[in-house]
Image (tube, rainbow over all chains, first blue to last red; front, side, top):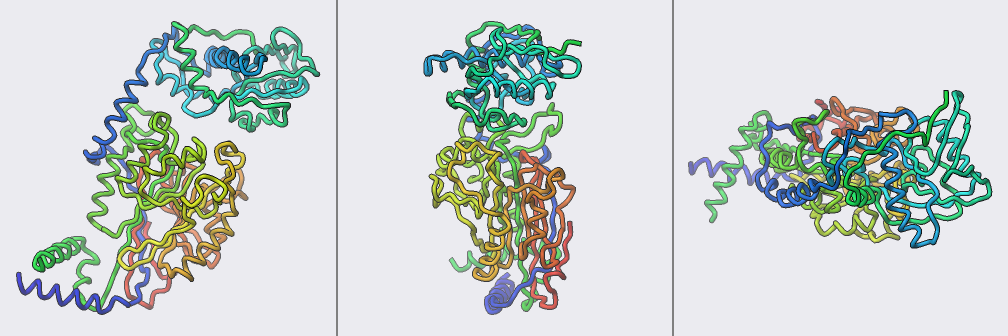
Amino acid sequence: MDSRLLILLFLSALTIGCKEKQLHLSKIEGRQISISDSLKANTEINDFIEPYRKHIQADLSTVLAYAVDTYSKTDGEFNTAIGNFMADAVYEEANPIFLSRTNKNIDMVLLNHGGIRAIISKGDITTRTAFELMPFENSIVVVALKGSQVTTLINYLSKAKKAHPISKLKLSIDNDDNIIEATINNKPIDQNKTYYIATNDYLYNGGDNMTFFQPNDSLYVLDYKIRNALIDHFKKVDTISPVRDNRFIQIK
Amino acid sequence: MKRREFLQQASASTAFVTLGSAGLTSFTPLKETAKVTILHTNDVHSHIDPFGPNDGRNANKGGVARRASLIENIRKENPNTLLLDAGDIFQGTPYFNYYGGELEFKLMSMLKYDASTIGNHDFDNGVEGLYAQLPHAKFDFISSNYDFSNTIMDTHTSPFKVYEKSNIKIGVFGLGIELKGLVNKNNYKETKYLDPIETAQEMTRILKEDKNCDLIVCLSHLGYHYNDAPNKISDLKLAAATKNIDLIIGGHTHTFLPKPTITKNKDGKNVLVNQVGCYGINLGRIDFYFDENKNKTANGTSIIV
């Protein structure tokens, strides 16, 4: 044992002696290691996460409302029950705030079909449902657009032929995607009127190629997340039973 | 006291021998070797818990606690290990929505991450939201092409860092993606985006010539490659337009590569580009072996992927 230690001492002295030697990169090995359940979880890390996990789980599991059916964004070509629900909920939660701040009403709501990130399942609606529906941090903004710009918005919808969620706007198109009728609050679009359109900041900034929100007459930032509007809405209503309706249809 | 030191040295050497290959040569006094291990993640997106057994795509994969044990084992095997992240630490699970990134940073500190660059989603709570979580991060934020001087993040990031492991100097710099059109201006505020290629040329010059680095690593959140926009700056384009980068650790495009990509730089020399998908379901591992053999030029380096 002792002699071995002596050799080590001798070796380490040598190593220090040749420290200045230039080393060269001789070999590189690269690979990817899968983090799978065959790896043992580190207890210290798990214990550290636990109180955070518990709090979130408890909060997410809070029952807010009840859904009479399962709703999916794929259950309609031009409008869906879930999309109608979301757009109407945004209108109902955001309009009182907008009205109190500006003395004006929101004229219509436009969200995007891709922004519906999950289904609403039949049964209890929890805070988790709202997080699944809207995992992103997007907030509600209200944009003042001239009637002529609203026409651009409507043209976009008629060409996109997607069930982008809308509220207060009614639109029908023919087989060739021409607009048959477009109304806001049951009145035709007035080219000279200013309309107040509620949307989210993602679309306002051109998301989903919705380039018609800018330039505009004015922008009102409500500092109100879409997800929080949904949570507030779920808390207010006991049961939801949205339906697909005739707000956006193609007449064949 | 002295005896204890000897014993520690003895056991360290024994451990080295059991590693095999390079172990025996270490007892030849005239030949010195070094091995640097670089571990990396990208786009973890607040995925702290593993995916559940019923997940459609990533069932039972990921999880920070498992990643911790894996990294711990690799560090035991080679203490000369650097742990890096290529950005988008934030956003994707309620952990971020509830705690704003606090837990992500605390856990990365516990796992002893050395550095991270900044991804577009790390601005999701604004430049203020990122700043607010900095006290929880005990690792470096490296960003070379975001000029934060007119923001609250000013002085809290470094354009590059030099780490020394087993006498090997590893220079790390970081590149972020253009924020305009991708991130709400209200979130990134006055953060200025600088040209990634020009920035990379300056960083590699500093790291190679001024700092005499043996290895240069670029932490990139530019994205691997864009099929629909081949002219858009990406890791593959960056590799081809620059020199002296040994490894680009990428992110943003959530690219799962069957193995690290070997491509050529401006001088025709090999560059390694790697990215390990997303959500912490993989860990990238690159081992760099050094020896004294002067006959080997950089291009004589064997790359095994």
